[in-house]
Image (cartoon, rainbow, N blue to C red; front, top):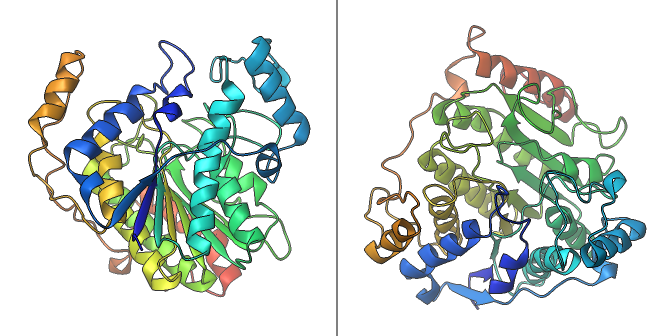
Length: 391
């Protein structure tokens, strides 16, 4: 049995909003080129399988049937449906939109199937992580919500508790909305404060539907310009304690890498090194609490040549239990190919571990990140029987 499975098909590059759109297929193409150049596809702990489009019935486990029909129509006729977010600046229409988005979703759902049935321990879909899509509308470059569909498949197969960890710079609003009233799903999103970044949601006080689900939506909004060390401190202050209490049987994590300082669509300053550490933490939590069941997804990330491929190659390596050496030189053939496209390429994978101050060392009310973290802990921890000051 292979330990990890990567879903990939060149047809995933067909999810293409057109020239000039930030979600360029080159993000994925260059990522896969780097993964191949690093020799990861030859590791015995990793297998690659094709991505097949999901059926309408599968998509409709998290999306309205009328919306699925509208996506298919818009992607055939190129007639905008602005009420459903189709044909906007964020989500322009293209021929085959339904099929391309269904392939993203199908890949993530297939991995969820394989995880639950014990075929694999870890699954990765770097083309997934479309966390903004709502049940009846496209949003934020996302047409179908593959993360939510994968979680729903795990629940339908018998999982009683699933944890979703969202590390994208933008609030994971679509996944949160779909499971807002479902106590089986813990959604945790660390993101730039909605007052300075799309989609403008994800306040610390947003904790889920009152009743059994209250406390299962967790938001950690951090201020613009938050560093990698502060970002890791915020994650460490909230995520491990809640995952421990939730006791998930599977962990789904979204690793949008747009929190990086070079990303053009956010205002954070989180290095690849810090993002790699978060990947390691998600992986470790899966082994500690979920019998290793870990589904890791891509997401945002718009520094297409010098950030995204590095972050997601590291993610695939982590899932394969073949972590990349920090500071090691990247294959010359890869960065020469990038530079031939007149793009800037990194020559090494990060530099070093990112030191951070543990929350156990004390809360600093003068620090803006600490204030955000403490607001989240005060809003959520008591709902889990935890002390926001001590636990």
